[in-house]
Image (cartoon, rainbow, N blue to C red; front, side, top):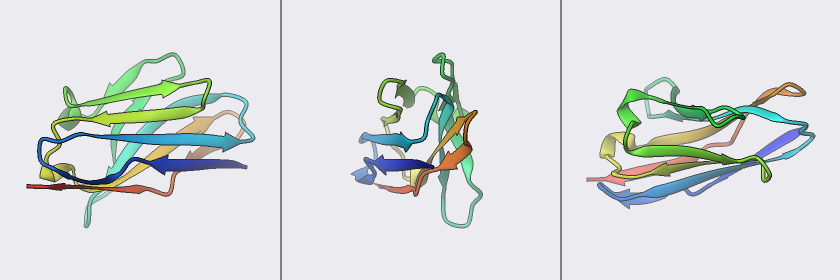
Length: 116
């Protein structure tokens, strides 16, 4: 059983910053890819960024240069630093992790709202 706890969402003005965290706990041997997705009202869930266990990162074009994903393997935690936020970044952000012993797991989601 794997549990994810997300934190860091909230309301921010355009141009502001937020930092999301997602901590994994439970029966974890090793985490592979850790990532962040988002879903805006009426839209499909989409990849924001992900990071491999070796630190290789991948970003959606619309966040390149503004968002930074990182992870702390000792803490089984992934972070998403979001800068220069825009109203179109408003969405529920979900953490997703993968591991050989459990497959994959989604977080509960955290709301990010960017006001103009």
